[in-house]
Length: 478
Image (cartoon, rainbow, N blue to C red; front, side, top):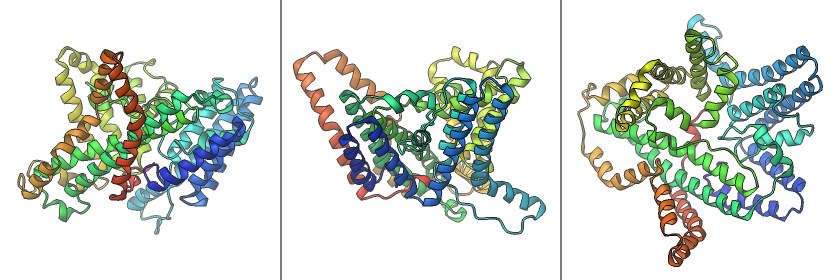
């Protein structure tokens, strides 16, 4: 079950919110959220739920152990290492054992048969949340939660345990036990959720269909795609990735607001960035800050000289790539960004700032565009054919009738999808409201929009979902 399904929107979430609102105490409301979260997560298989329960128990007990031994640095450190180590061990087994054994088999021929290990949905997200919780208790940023079920609620809350954002316990610790839901925030949450739903159901899914048309899964089919088709396919994949991923964050933030939780922003229009450095300040913010705070800074950050800084960055970006999927192309994708970030740190960024913003923006989009090609294709031979095909070196020609027809039929959609990746519409909406909002007629129009807008968005998304079934987890290996 995913957020962008009719089952989730009209049955699961609707029933959960109805029961939640009928509860007369926060404890009962939390129980409803926990029960719904367990059902939601078990939907993909009860064994995944057992793993979640075990990993939450490890973090819960290790955090209490750290808290009770706060005056004994050595024992406290042992508790932290054990808690984090067990989490990483489980993540490593389920996500990376097949990858490591596959590479070992290619080199040595052992093992003869690779084990079939199913990747639990969302394991990367809730593992990082639980790790951040244990480390923050160790650092004294937050006290250990004594109630196991509340730790389980924090890590397994269905709003964000599947596709993020990565929420830190210290940011929601108070809200878990004493939050209040404001009516204005419920309205804001509904708006945010419906925007994310349309972003996913209408825009991301449609972009994916065009991308799949021109980036087919077989080499034989790819050889028949002309250069213009490949360029268009990569563009649509670039749009799809942002719209898909940010849509889930929008929906998670919206559902959080409806129930009194305030999750931090996870995407801030990264495609308007003027440098690769700025792009990563805007893209998947919860992941970037996680690696910064729990890997980069503890390794020494930029405090131990230039060489050590470069090494620390190398480790962070190799891990960033590997976090996205257990394959070499993801590692190379992370190191691809490492290369440009190092270039920018060594003076290029300062020179970039002296140029017109358009130059920096074009440079950044070009880097990101080609980065997504590396991200998409795990087969290196396929990757090579795509890059050659983009420049007509596969004897594939420049364009054909299919490319022209698809482009012409979707030109307005493509423009709308690009606009959806920018703050243009949002800024225009607020500027008009700021300038003319005091006029009675305008205020009535805006009130009508805020009431009717979410309803129209849900109807639009419903029509798209009825006619289009698409699996977002084909693209993300979290």
